[in-house]
Amino acid sequence: MTDLLTTSLFWLAVTLGVFEATDTVSKRSGRHPLLHPVLWSTPVLIALLLWTGTPYETYQQATFPISFLLGPAVVGLAVPIWAQRARIRRLAVPIVLALGAGAITSIVSAVGILALFGAPREVLASIAPRATTTPVAMAIAGQLGGVPALAAVIVLFAGVIGAMFATPLLNLLKVRDYRARGFAVGVAAHGIGAARAFQVDSTAGALASLGMALNAATTAALLSILALLV
Image (cartoon, rainbow, N blue to C red; front, side, top):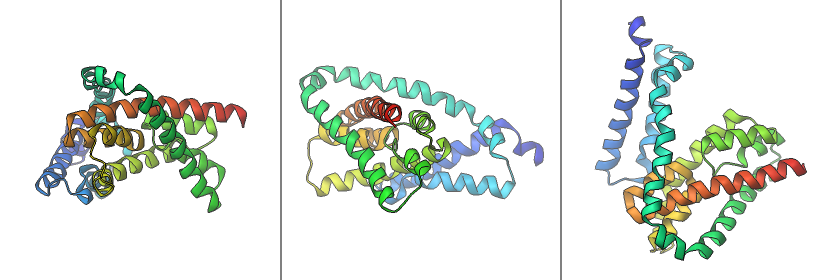
């Protein structure tokens, strides 16, 4: 059993199996917000690691193929963006305005709320890039004097919460345009939100991918300037 737990193929299979199971439950529920597969597969895998006493380093090495494929998957999001290039070109001005509003609001709201509660500077620096992708957030958090690991966790939760509640919230607000819906989700909930947007509509997915990429670059630029000034 000990040999099995240290086998790379075992934990890779377990990870894929757990996600497939939770995703199946999510599909059968009609993609209910509270049954998002990432929300449930993560604690299940954590519980399995604790129950078997498997070190995280072992699990990380075993699931390296999945982590590696995240890079090509993100690059692959350029395909639907290219397919929508004519429409995106016509929306250049609204996209720039929405991007600026979204990036600034994301930073100011998160940092402002925690600052009101007296959070230490390390936590503020870690939450500032919460709407970007995990690698970008970790790099920015380290540059600002935050905790990269904490930034990664915050980004994960931001993405999951955005993917869970974006659709019902936008329905409640009666936002019908899938271009606006997708871009908003991409800016607020990065890759996890973009994946959810693709499940709703292809146009929404393409604009969500664009929003994710542009917001990561914009937030990185804004916070890097802030780091130099501070």
